[in-house]
Image (cartoon, rainbow, N blue to C red):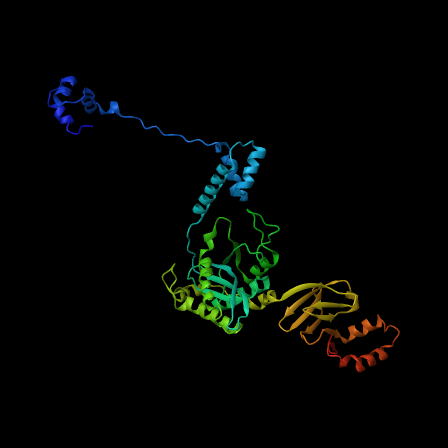
Length: 411
């Protein structure tokens, strides 16, 4: 289009203009003159292209399945093909589902900062494989909890992720912090969530975890699907735990490894700046700790006891950790609960304490004296008097290293 022909130049010819004459004068086509005089006449309307897809009639169905039940693309494709007579290919469905899920993640993943004392986040660094200087292998987990506002952290070396271990670590963290937050955010770990009763849209907390939280006074919050970064604070901490891999074949024993973990915990709180706050966590923690709530540790300690259920054999004994322990004859065939507390095990039936035993790997068989006498009476010694049985015990059984008979209080 010629830029030398302007409205100003054309208008110099007067009000009545012969477009052909002007065209010859300027050496152009008369339409060029007309375009300058009537620009609106030559404007082209932009046409918006409307894209359609064979998937359009089914998108509402797909959206509902994704948002409510997290159905994978394969399941949605099978549903559309079977029930809705979808004729398209799987690839179209897969692409739409993938884009939809990514859109949900983007919309829900909003960085948020919690107010002081309101939230902390919990996770595990799972199954780190490390070796001591002698080549002995340790498969360890690291319990992680971080305060949402100050980023003050507590980490602990563990050798399992059982519920009693989780409770123990939480209690230790409360003691370390000097209290607990209003709520604690967990991943959907099986020690917190009843995975049998839960589904995508309705998470059910298992009864023991719920009772622990009530006794401690905090609210359990679980990380919803499609919201991976809502617990980003603790996931960042989990990545930092990879530093421990540098100590592979560098530590002496379990105690040495525990001291390394404690040193790392100290440095993260008192030396290194948090990338999120640009502050050393202890600086902000000094302000946040005033908002933490004290807990009753005496009540919470009971949650750390290891409880297991065992059936009483025909010998009127239970087997536990390679040893056998006697109970009164009336419990034969019944299920007893074993509570393992440090060096003592307690045997319960329907929450009633039956016996307590000191753990001692030296003895294969452990009897209460009265139990043993009753057992002998109901076996090959059933024709003997109690005096004869007592004499037999005194002369023979006390000399056997593998048998321990407790003559003290049955409890």
